[in-house]
Amino acid sequence: MLLLAFDTATPAVTAALHDGERVLAESTVIDARRHGELLVPAVDRVLTSAGRALADVTGIVVGVGPGPYTGLRVGLVTAASFGDALDVPVHGVCTLDGLAWAAGEAGIDGPFTVATDARRKEVYWACYDGPAVRVTEPAVNRAADLPQDVLALPAVGAGAALYPESFTDRRPEPAHQSAGSLAALAAHRLAAGEAFAAALPLYLRRPDAQVPAGYKAVLPT
Image (tube, rainbow, N blue to C red; front, side, top):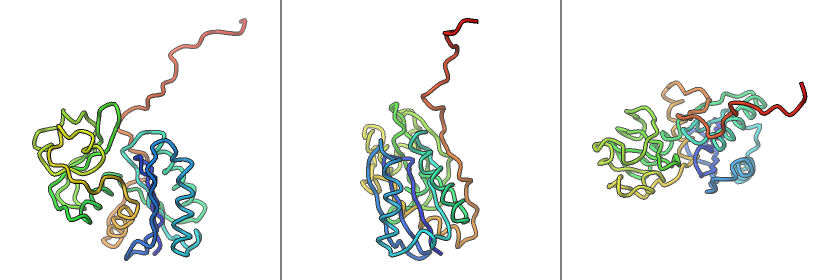
């Protein structure tokens, strides 16, 4: 097994290689505006660092969000392209689940909350009863509008760090997505025979760009 994992649903452009037992190489750059420029070089770095070729990959793991439209689609389109070119399966994993697994690696057990920055003074969030057990569906809300029992839980992720007045039990790690943790979670699910999400975007809200309601005629009729 050789899994190539990456995620562009958050400001972390992160890629990793995992052999089913351990992370062989990982690269993470925090940049919310250059996902398209940074992802493929990150893949090249982890392949080079691990001494492997792209043709050695047996499966693609990609974060499906929730996340902003522009960044998220970079990872999903790249995953689909690699999967098609290599003729290997593409496994979709909720980005929040990857952070939850990383929280477990940092020593946090359930229950806890994962929150990422959704902009517009909102967070993408979900609750967990352990690193691999999500107990709520991913959602997007203003931090202050979350139920008090959710806000009282230990919380990880950049979204929690942005709103300390709401998330009162913040934990410093993990702050950002890790493709290594995403790959480790995928390896765990593969070993357990669990199903994966389709590699389709989990947006949770409509994109900012809208088609104009009407067009001004500029040519004679």
